[in-house]
Image (cartoon, rainbow, N blue to C red; front, top):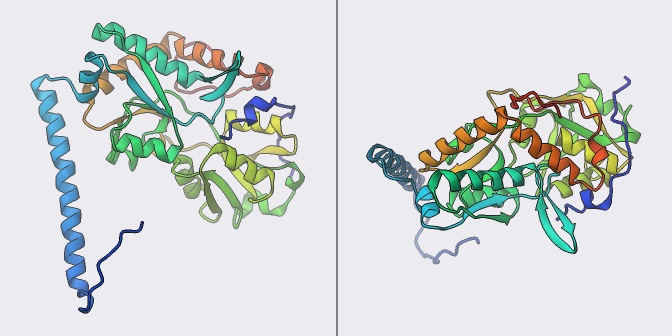
Length: 339
């Protein structure tokens, strides 16, 4: 079966340079506790966790009812910076670029966060500085739950994640693509009717894509990696059979490595009810802050600002022509701009 393939060209080194106890137990001479006792302890721990979550929810509700500012608004009004947790390994969303010998963060989600800082400065009547903490995706998720960061872009507000954090309205959705080695284009393993059975497929650990891919292709063998760079190297070096990547990033990667291609016959769109799209994630208990973010997002999605952020990010690539002919649109951008 002939598969459609993206036109390939060389990407400069900058796009691929995005690489970026067990507790001890006192020995006892008595016999092990009965299973019922262990079960009771587990139930007690679960109840304690549930009570803690309920208390946090009640506290947030009381804060909202009393008209008091939430934790993030309070710290911003006190002059503290807005801390952004980011995994800067996904051009054109977020990536590193050396400018005049200095490493800088680029990407449309980086521009978004700076834009949000400006908006908050106007709304709160104080200067809101923005600071970025670049870390792995799993690190970003952990930092959000621990309230070590105030906001994190590029995360899907899935039902599972909403148990531990809150989300803005979504601002971007795009196709999830399957990347394979070009030499294996006609490999029966990738025939659509085989539903990727036994195909070793790389994805990023902790990503919503890993979950939705497994739902789309339950017969495939999913292998999680820490970063996008690891995922790309795994498929390029033949450690895995395929990789699942967002379409824009996949286009860049395939043009960087002419031996890779996008298999559009196997690519898929995630159902909205499972993955509504990329949102800004926020620690729980900051409903007032999320409400402000939503108002701002609705504005930039409708007035063309978001599209301008994307265009700017593409121009920051070493070779902006790499995304020429990219036909897919951000379905959540309600302006008249095309990308």
